[in-house]
Image (cartoon, rainbow, N blue to C red; front, side, top):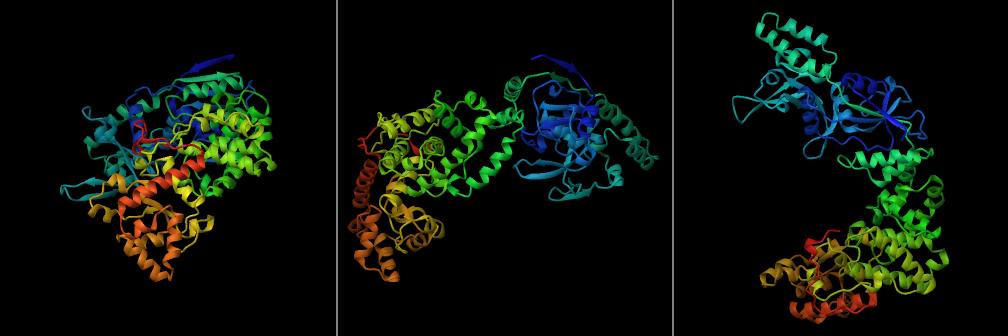
Length: 593
């Protein structure tokens, strides 16, 4: 780094420069995120001349950096220059909050305490401001886009709305508009005229000027200006300065790096994201996942140490990204095809989102002939389900991603030793009793297995689950013995809520079942749909349900038989024996996916 300069300009001048476009943001910087409460707190701090921290800016002159500039939110593009003199590296949120509230002249776009997007205007309650005994934040008043403010009345059950949109209303209620702090002459003149016959109100204005307006006009802010800084150093600086605030992701840091090569990574990703998310199973895919797959593919193909660690991703260049991005997108599309084969159609039913990363990377590395080879498909399927039922991705790590990328492809292509994800995967019998919610990968895995390997058909429609019927019939996982029936029989909730008493059914069938015992709802479905008992028994078999136990409302017999059937199904798909009881199984209620 060649150097830096420290200055302490007036806040008013910095905000003026922002409004004129002299100071802008690099395009990869995150959007505006501060909420109403933080804005009010910031305004109060400045009014009391408290320090609000320094600002870090970059002078791009003499650097190898070519950032795409973006105006600070609230700046009118018609009033701003196109090319800035400096870029904000740290301090975006504070400067945006202050510019919008003090300078923009329009309502501030922010969020309320519930995270809802709102528009706010800010005022100082002049009387509260001059009271030394009150918290200054209480004097910073926030009201809606219409300038209406609800105030307490003498009746505790009623509130009165006052409209502060006119100067006259502001004078009457002693509410000073915060966006007039640096341009207050006309407002002060109007206020003085309104209260010319009331010396107390005139004195209030004088005290307010001394206590609030003057500190704002004299407030300066420490600014560190970086000069002639190389691109690599800027990325490192970004990583450091944002650790205490809104942390930048590796995608945002790489966006900064590639901007120096005149490449707009965010735009490229948004185009690819739109295409990929046409598949609902990829709804939770994010830009970091995409870069992880690309880095795995690049390092594997280029005979480097296979990795997708943060530093490796940040070393990507424009040429590397452009060479591999299409293959990565193809890898995700192939992953969708693979998941659909496993009867996983929706993101909420995906056992592990993290396992998508090595899956897409492996499929991107394989050619079409290899992808469609039955033996390859068999190994890939075994690896996938070992990852699910072995719960190997409960804590997704870059190291596991890299290991699977190397070991699974070598296992597939060169008949090497089976990968660690397969070798180390174990499933225990008592884990079935703990699978009660979608927070567990094996829970979702069994749901998919029933539709895939067993080809389970809906009780009412008699159709097996395919992509179209999954969405058209609103297929979900429902109780076989209804909850209410189980409660009346005194069955333990942990037992009747487990995956053993659940299966994939349409919403229509679930409504038919209601609170009825199986013997009753099976008879009604058979009569209503004109289906033979023998045919219904075949449908029940496809769900790994023993028809005799179900027709007799024998919960214990049903439960034990289905538990063994599910164990057998897991053993077949993983090609591994399910182990006896273990005290180390993880309670699904505590699991984090």
